[in-house]
Length: 494
Ligand code: PFF
Image (cartoon, rainbow, N blue to C red; front, top):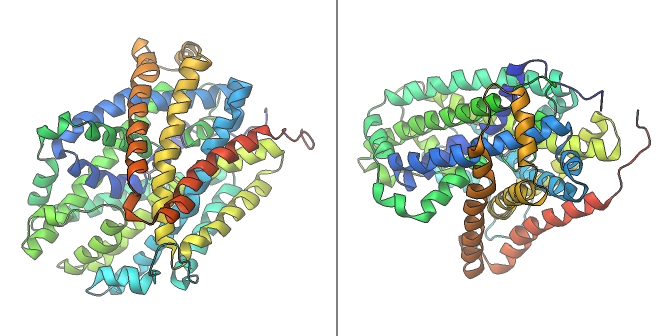
């Protein structure tokens, strides 16, 4: 425990936490989610979710890591022996996410190169699915490995595992100190360019125009909480692990506010950039903005290439910057999520950091090959949906209920955080975690379950949903329990 690695500087920790939070979720998820859920009016539930769940949970996770100085499983077991499984469950969820997140970064890397020659041509959709991904005809057909995906995928794994082997200070901290400032500068260039395009104003108008009628809809609030959870990397075991490397004298609460607000600022910036560009595209096509709005894979790999095609000048450079931003934002999140199992395995099995990276990262890299096959996109879509809805959100619910109601440690966590932080926590913090968050997450789970038990996500065949969705989400729980049952290895301990 004494030899635990530490962040070199406070800024290093904050950059790493922000690096984890700022990911694909900010760039391709937030803008479309905000638009669909009331535009400007969405900011109300969004801010509410940030202040009542996002930042309070971030403070909780930072406190846990700082207090117990261990990976998520170790921290939970120090909280109370019986809760170790919860830590492993979160680690298992993170493991699954890392296997497909790496593949998306690989696509972005390939597209960064394609930008220079506009390789995708006029039919960007056809290019993505038929030529680049060589997508299988039906879900569940695996087909062969796609060479144009596997080459960048190998590069992604080499960089990520290389950074992790180099350690907390010389690897993770250093990488984030380079990636995050570079990301911000490059992204600002994109936003300024997008803002000066014809039609940008119409795009922004569509984005910010509030639709107050939506506010009364429970779904909008669920969407706000979902976005905050995913975006802040909460209940992924990440923030507990990262804060376990904080020196004893470190501010907790202030750091959580800085991380939360920085992440939201980047989200807003992404909304402005994406909608300016969508406004430009709509103007070029002579259609209303609402017809070109999209999110996720479609936004990044179909719509953006179209926008890049139509730019008046320097298309290649703009395209490169956009995809490079996805790569940087993605890599810093990927590093954080893999660190959860690197640290967990290292502590449980008493092995060196390198062994743990090679073993854990190696297995993840092999599994990620599944998503680099022709059927990859279907597996990815379903696994992503289920692991988020029945993994992250559910684990978050268990986490708050455990701390607030089962082991009843909120008060002692509050004194721990207050002892080192500038900002002192009040009753509001405990109410947010003990009442508001469980109620909202509980409702969210109920709603999710109801939807998924009555209809099949994405109209996929039932067997496919079962084999690639439910079994992945349930498998993560099972793995969590199995790992927690196993005794900690004692040999080699120093
Ligand atoms: N906060 C991240 C995002 O917005 O993309 C969520 C995340 C996803 C973190 C995947 C880490 C990760 F590997």
